Image (cartoon, rainbow, N blue to C red; front, side):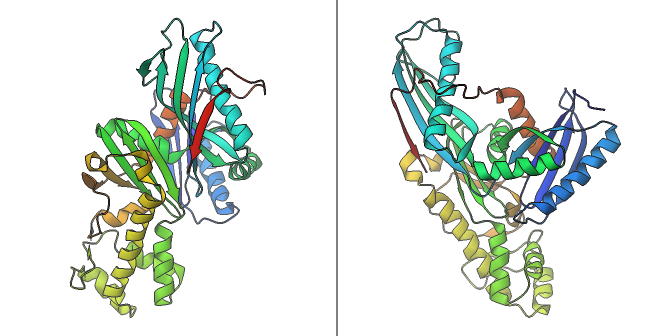
Length: 387
C-alpha cells in the first residue's frame, strides 16, 4: 500500500547512501546507510537504492513511490542577485512576494538556463527604507523594495540524469535539495553560535559554508576531496586504489601527529602495519598533510572570501563530511592562513542528515514555479554576480 503519512528521505552521497522514513511526528521508523562505490552512470548507487527500498517496504508493509532527495554534486553553482524597484501599483504583500520569487526564476532561466534552482535564500529586505531579515507580510503597503538573495543551483544535466534513473526504479522525486546547505542550516540550531563556518570534506569535493549572524554569506565547492588523498597514496607508493584507501583509513582511529617536522608522533599499530608494506611512515604522513593543506587553502582562496568582507576571526569552523574523520583522533599542524576563532570536528549522525532534508522540505519547499515569460515588477532593474 501507499502510506501518505510517511516521509521518505534519501541522501545521495558519493560514497554513502542514507535512507530514512519518518512519520508525521518526525519519528524515524526505518533507517539504513550503505557504502557505495561511485561510478559515472550511478549504477552502483541505484542498485543499492533498489535494495534499500525493498527492505524498507518489507519491514513497514507499505509501497514507496515518493522521496525527498538531498544531494551534493561535485559541481555546485551559487549566484547573488539584488532586485530593486519602486512599486507603482497597489499590490498585496503576498502578490509582491510571489512576484519576487517568479522574477528570480525568470532571471535564472534567461541567464543560467543550464542550471536548476535548488534553493532561493533571502539575506535582506529593505522595504520603505526599513531593513528586515525576513519578508514582512504584515506590512499593509509597499512603495519601495530592495532584496538581496542567493541562489544555489545544480547543473541541469546532473539533475536530469538522476531523475531518469529514479524513474527507472519507479520512484518520484518530490524535491532535490543541496545536502550541504540543509545539513549546515540544521546544525546551526544545535550549535547556537553567532558566527559559524563549515568545511565539508567529501569524497570528490570540498565545500566551504560561512554564516554570519545565522545568515548565509558564502557557499563554494572545489572538486577536490578525500579520494584525492587516496589517489596520491596510490600514485606515490605504486599500490592499488583499494590498498591506498585501506592505508588512509588506518589513520581514522589513530592518534598521530601530522606535521612538517619529521619527528612528529606516530601511532605504533598503524606504523607497524604500514612498515610491513614497505611504506615510509614519514613520507606517507607528508603526502596526507600536503593534500589536506591544499584542500584547506583552495577552499578559502578559490571562494574569494576577501570579496565578502567576512570576519573569520570571530567565526568557529566545524569540519564535517566523511573526509573529516581523519581529524577526529589525529593532530594536524597546518599553516593557519585564515585565523578562525576555533577549529573543531562536528560529529554527524546519519539520522540527522536525512532529517535536515525533511526539515527543510516541511518549512521551505513551496516555491512558486515560473508561470509565464511576462516581465514582472522586479525585472526592470537587477544586478547579479556569480562565482
